[in-house]
Image (cartoon, rainbow, N blue to C red):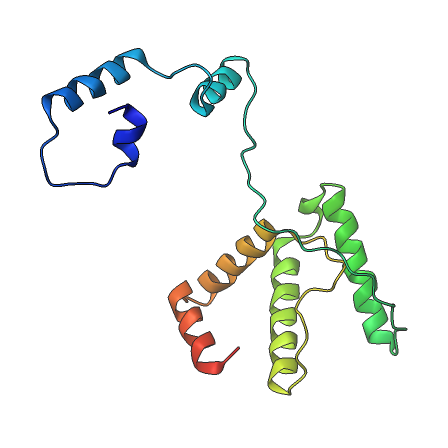
Length: 164
């Protein structure tokens, strides 16, 4: 029995035979057989080629939706503020906006979104043309849960109870 057959065979409670033990030791001693996927991976690593460190689980295509005109001055001001924040982040000047200001904005946005949700104004938290990555979302979710002393389990429980 070869090493690959031994690895893929069903687990049994029987002790392997002496021949199977010898075959296993020989396979381990020989190492990786040329021409296998394992050999190609080792060769790539020796040549300095590396596999991507991040695996893309899903891609969300951007959808082009017609832009609705802004109907009031407050909304226009908020969009301008959001654009200004995006410029600061894109330029790498995140220290330009003090932590207290960021906390105040985050608090106000959380309360605004929740107030809309309570009134039945259900909409996606992010627009279609967002630059927010999955990592950005996870970091923020974790920080929000920690800020209000909640665990992920409690979030899942609340979501199952509230059908949200």
